[in-house]
Length: 300
Image 1: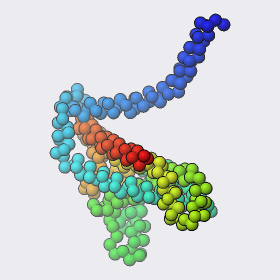
Image 2 (image 1 turned 180 degrees about the horizontal axis):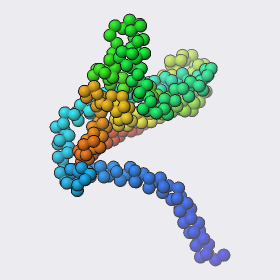
Image 3 (image 1 turned 90 degrees about the vertical axis):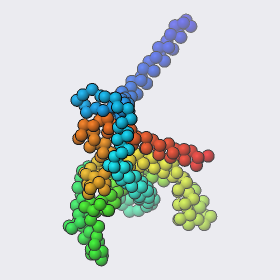
Image 4 (image 1 turned 135 degrees about the vertical axis):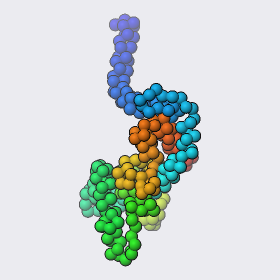
């Protein structure tokens, strides 16, 4: 074989390898472009227009943002979204870590318990919301019946109370999500070398000291991932709130995603809803970037 023909064969093999690689990633890339990238870019443009889906978009500049800043509903929804995140993120983090540590022990029936705690995450969200609405029913719900049985004279009104509706949503959300993040923490716990715990026991470290000085530092990458995922999911919460309370009573559980849905899908004000979506995206992006920078600083 001449040198020229050998070089040609090598180029053909490289081209074939490249095409095989593209054949694997192209479907995913096309799906991402069609379902995520293009809608995001369209939202960015629509945020500066007035469009109801039946007429040609009219360029209005920053009018949608000025209207948003003047809207009392926007600030109420932003505040509620923040309160939901403040409650949902730390409680889910603590519950999932506690469950993972407990179910990482050699307990009888641990496989069943892991499955039982993970099951709510794959259960229909509608079923979860309906069941928790029944559990938290002010008059006939088992939760308030139990509180009355232990001496609480005036138990919370839960989803019928402006003060307790958001805690009810947070409790339901934590119960549903903690199983999923428990699995992530279990994977992290099982990657920690057992020799570290044995050495700590030999040195006289107790359970709390081993948890604080071995488990927590070793789980830092997992905790960071869980924190980022919880932050994103908390700020875009929609379905659970919509099913449980529809944003009520009043506007006590109204979140930004519901305002976007109402303005865009129900009212046909796609430009205004896109402006709110853009603001929500910037908020989540900013918090995520801060989290990444904080994590990098801790790793140094």
